[in-house]
Length: 394
Image 1 (cartoon, rainbow, N blue to C red):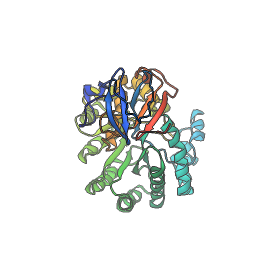
Image 2 (image 1 turned 120 degrees about the horizontal axis):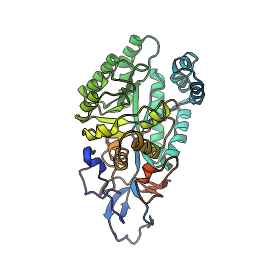
Image 3 (image 1 turned 180 degrees about the vertical axis):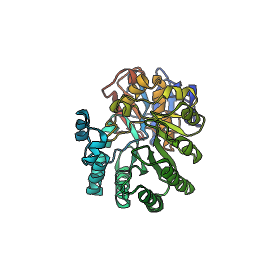
Image 4 (image 1 turned 120 degrees about the vertical axis):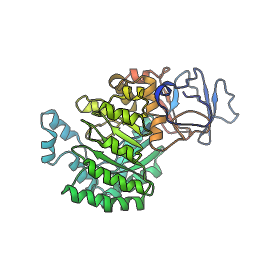
């Protein structure tokens, strides 16, 4: 539990990632959705509902800052084929992979997409994720992308936690590459920013996504209109995208399993976050980003699930923490900070991710009495109770 002083909530880097500010036997007062007091042996107001934690860990709710939780269809058939030795390229030729998801999204109504998204977000909330980013990106056409974003917005207005929509406009190529990317930059991007002012714009820069030059054009235009920028890149090797992302002051560079030491050092020296997603490595061949070295170099680190039907079919943040400690070189404290206060900062949110005066009362009560068990244990749900804006929701 973080018991730091009022005000000045900022993302943490370097040694500060390991400073959880644990109060061994502390109390937290939540009033009107915010943290009103933190300390040992607080006197409860006469009308307060008292919840006895009995020495268990009370901590900030998890913030999942990179998901693709809005989709239609499933990816399990493709996965079983892959287990049988069928390559991703052959699966795509057979009509599977990402483009199968695109077809399913296009066939679904906005109401159906919203309902399916809600069925995914509710168990995420029960598992302690009180704030979640949700991307579009499976539409590929203007109509379908706007449909996805409106479905996400509908759930945002109804869900007990916080949903942050992101417009993933550079996800895949449909038809001629030059013509398609030009349409996205000249037509889809303006349509999105007019309907969703201030929304973050995202792209995937890799061999199966968008090339560097097309991403640069998309980001240059989005940057001119003041939109936050994010990019997923360097899953296998350096694409050159990190340097381009830094030029336009991108909010985050995500993925990074194959990033070079030089690129990671450049990213670490900036104010752009590195968002690492070890669940992807677990599901796809065991390649993990070097989070420990990135932190030691002073980088701004966040962790996320990358929840999607193809490369990371999980919404478990405790599993992400367990993988990050085992395979990415993080300590348990660094991993916890990376998926709370730092992940909130990736989404531009400074009112959550710590337990301190004035912060939004998004907190979770674990069944553990030692927060390090979040990393040591894996495969279960350690969350006993979830509070969003001070209300018990799980």
